[in-house]
Image 1: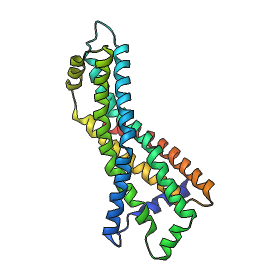
Image 2: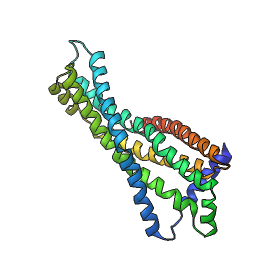
Image 3: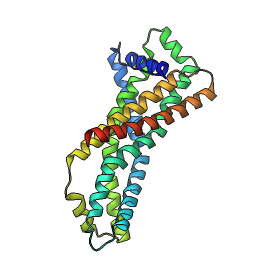
Image 4: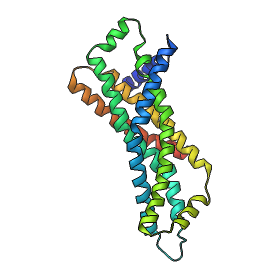
Length: 243
């Protein structure tokens, strides 16, 4: 464990050394931002709308009492979406989509000796391959989480229109009442940390792949599993510290 942790830290140190040509790294960062952000927008949008709708319906069902105002469904759906569903579930989905792509891409370059060729040419391979992915993930994950929060709350409103369990006016009243900006800050901090965890762990697994196509698949699986576990652990730590 300590050997792997040491290699992970040393790899991160190499990844963030001063670049030789900033323009080359900038082009890679832009390419990765498009791949991670635009490429993940569809799946994040679909998941967010359905989770927001399902959360609102379930809250309305569990709190169906004349003693409880209907607007509470909007408040609970809003806070649960902002604090937990949007950042954490989005991160777990992105670990499967983005993390596996990062691990398999770098792992394939390792087993086909493309990374060795970069090092022979004097290129800082970790910096060229890994740092743009980490920077792009830490930049795009918060934006995706903001989109997810918006669509999650919108999904709850659509559920109110369709099901009739809660009137849209009561739902919107609950969404507006008692809003605390701290919840959004917590969600954005989680998104930044989750982006770093997923990109760095999956890149580490891919960079130290050895063997052939079978080992590339194993590295991709390990990267997704380890990053998901660390995302859940970081979620607990951040929630405890900031709330």
